[in-house]
Length: 338
Image 1: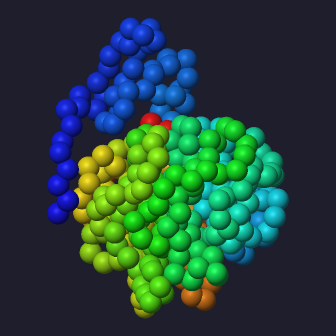
Image 2 (image 1 turned 180 degrees about the vertical axis):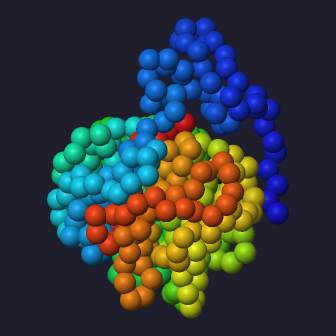
Image 3 (image 1 turned 45 degrees about the vertical axis):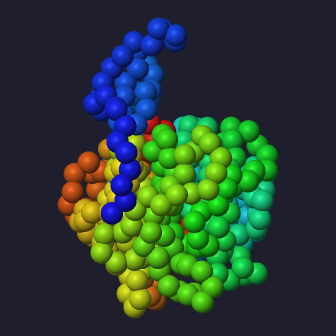
């Protein structure tokens, strides 16, 4: 078990008046954020979720309202055809990359339309773990055919400023086809496929970095029962969910959860409505919606959801516009945004 010293923190939901900014602030369990009484989005988080490109998608982007069950609608298109994507976002812009190239693309979350060029990664790769806070987006690990055991690079961008990614540090091991998520403080990278000599070998460890700094990842925890890869993850500021994936010889429907502020082993949450790998996941402060994925021999168009702060099985949400997998996802209310 990993031991970390506890920090003196006020209870989540505490309110204070900041005399420097002359604003009321609320503590979300990890950080103090402004309370803006004129903006429901700032109080409760955004509810737009995007499912971006991928295999079998025909490069389309789907959108949902995370707060309301129903089918996804067409949002636009990725401006190039590719799969093996991952992405993340701040409150207004999503950034994503993959396809074994180095291109980073962007799209405005609340404005329907096609993606456009943002910049380049420091090294070409796909199957990346992505996470973000309100300012920075991180691209962790990945795979390139010239590096068959995976890569340990961490790159970062300032999401509102187009340009090339900059080196941040390294995850602890070379791996790919895991997944990422964030609180306002830290980015979490969950396992994936591992190093040379273990191709196709799932790893169950969980890494973490502090998003606002630079440096290498540290150990944060491990999965609950057995290791998976090709999974999906999403979080609010307090809790992160690890969903589905593959552990030889089968896909799994298991959901696990972790505390985003306390290192340790994941715990059982419940089950998805179906067993798939390469799914997409988006979140608001209240709900996670998992979509799409692959279970041989076909992709799926299903969307299901859970309430983050409970435990239990997922229930039906709706359907994507078409069956797809291996794409990116982003939302304007995920855990890294507070």
